Length: 590
Image (cartoon, rainbow, N blue to C red; front, side, top):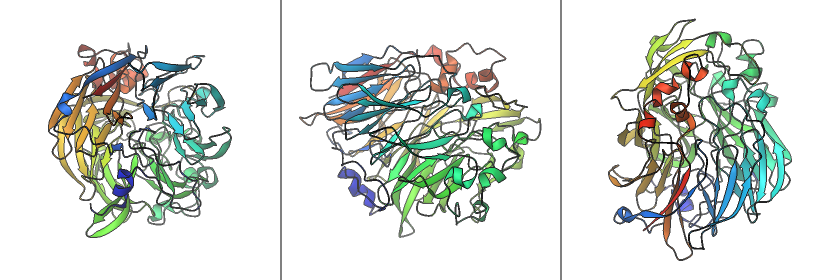
């Protein structure tokens, strides 16, 4: 990968404008800041700061810390804008602003959302939030788990507007981080495992007025699909596939959550997002491809209209979904520079896609994915291995990956300097048995029993460097638990990530050699960030607080509960022996 136009853009901290119809993006942020969960709109989680290096990272130490007081899963990373650090906690959400210029960085304001009636938590993922969004007008955009999107004054914490985006009665909660593009804030919903019909919505940052909404299922007018969903593949070109590929009206309760990561390409003006798995997992209750669940979309950010859609796991009987981030980058493929989109999917396949057309350029396994043999070039469809396709009422054993996917929305980092994507991953397989599921609004609608076990090699987690230009693994680290937190890369060749058993690690981006580690008070689900003060000193921050999917290890899941039937406690059951819940913000410096 050479000559990437994205490299210069990232190192300059610049954000440009490609498509004339797209909203004007916000001004370029300072390299010292971390203004969005992915740092930039492309979601690279790459910092151009250079004080910390492989030569001195061993000198990092804790400078200050802050307890959130919450025992739920802490997946949200802080944002840093100017001399303020902003942090959101799990439900019932509190938002804090810290003054980085004062000794000890004390809080300057606190916003506390009303707890209200506690909604049913997402089955796999606790009542976490994955982050805030910020707009240069001085607004913070805050998703509240029960379904509201709130705008706060970044100066005072005062609530400026509030709008209802989810529907707790239908199980549609809000966990995903919003993305600000121009004067729009774009946000999705969770709750696919409740049979909630997923949607992605854009709101006006100033007023909270809805500008567009695109559903994951339904007719093309609801999904905001143009005349053809993807000209590269005939299976995607028939009208109203979001209805025709479902049994009867099952698309109305078919899932397709949109709580995954959102990215934006300022070169093409396209917004990229994935949709979650269909509901229920029992394929016999909804026969067909179940479009447009487990799919990727490229949308015009101003209108929401899809330039293309690509279904990665048709019919998705395994619960994978496609919510992981998709990072726009330019790849050198055989001496030809391609505007690509790189997506490492929960189904175990890593895709390099032409981001203008949705055509797959490369697709290879990045771990043990025995459910499929390969992706067929002419159709773009993975060819399932018949040994791992569950028939009516029949259990399949040792299918990989598990229903948590090879990734569980833990975000990767991309370094334009090495050309590598640094990927936190699960190494879990499962026995899966389809069972009948009855739909009731706001209740679990799963349709499967599962038993999760460690994958090949006996370890349950992996951290790896993926070369998207050659579709190969450069190096990997085995971890005892699934790596559910995100990765962060720097311009000096450092990569940071956290582990469920509480280690924050810095490794060499070239070879994965560990350079530094710190034992946090709790397991880490968030993504480390880095920022700089006015005098140029560089800091690293991370939020510890185990929970999320791993919350099952700390809950009393009875033998008859939905959590137990999904096999989640078995994936994390020994975690309480090595760590405890409890949210703590840690800030490190030299």
